[in-house]
Image 1 (cartoon, rainbow, N blue to C red):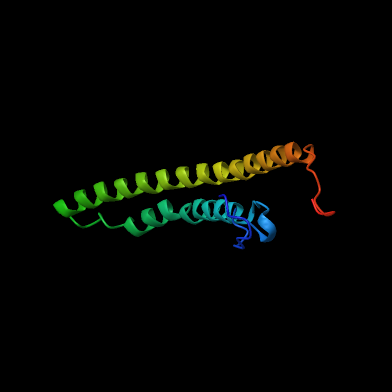
Image 2: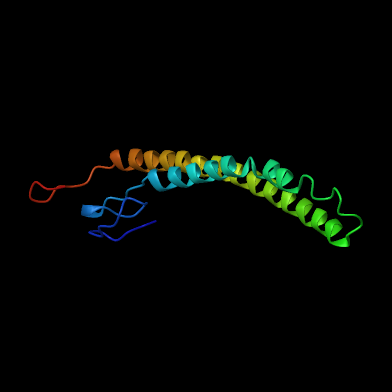
Length: 124
């Protein structure tokens, strides 16, 4: 995110005092950690669904609602598996963004470090 000179916002990729562009790894890493936590939290859900459904069909006879319940359960299991997969992928992608932004920032800084600017009144 590009800020205006003198724009003082939080370190979430905005400008800091004096017009220096800043990149903060914190928000990206917190988001990646959150995605990792979701993977962990969703892990036991399938076995919890299985435990909740145990014994449900025993003695229920031929209730058609039970067949529908099985289809709904299978659908939720697929959704949960997909969510875990997506969250696992997001964590790595967000960490890659941090690394990429850090490398880009260093490359830009190195480019500017080599530029000589004339000083006016002893101030660069």
